[in-house]
Image (cartoon, rainbow, N blue to C red):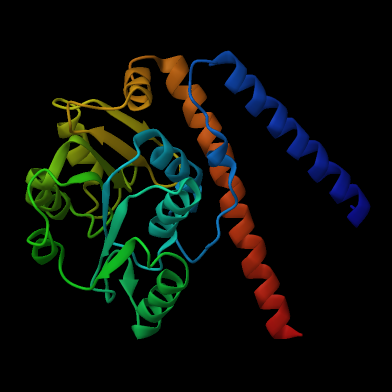
Length: 273
């Protein structure tokens, strides 16, 4: 197949995806899909989180957290997505990234260059409201008051015991608006146990789960949620609404993943040339 034919086929596929996406939104008109979900990410780094970046944008606008904490930042793809939305919306949110920046058996171990890169990007764009905390999750929790945190993203070591401990240690720090986000909730291999713990939380709290991008589950821990967050959680009981929301964000997320792959290929070609 020649290159011009490939370009034509790509355009057709893109148009088809956009048309289907529009139909999904129109069939679910009460769902609040704000325009911030369509932002292009400022920072795309090596990550298993690319496909959830548009939802991160949406979540910041829907939830408007006063304090955000992320446990497990690595290269910063998820954290900087949250920060980008906070900055774009000019919110007064205070955000904190907690990590030892050494790695683990699940994420792999890495050198000092990773922290240096995250620190540089944070200092350049988000130091007005963002703080990096290079310490353990348990130790970091001691620096927050009870009921202070509105949004907690847990993405550290993914065994059942580890994720349960993270949740229980930080639960008292969550406010009456508290929302917890778990990544890798659809990974069922080796000793990953997020999906097991999430299934337990479902019995107590309202939830919504995305199956794409290794899984992302949102838990409404606080009783005082915004109207938009209530709408998201209530959709969990309707299979059609779940499918429409998942389709919308998986398609938007795939665009971010594709953008990263293109960026990586361009860099590889530049090195070869």
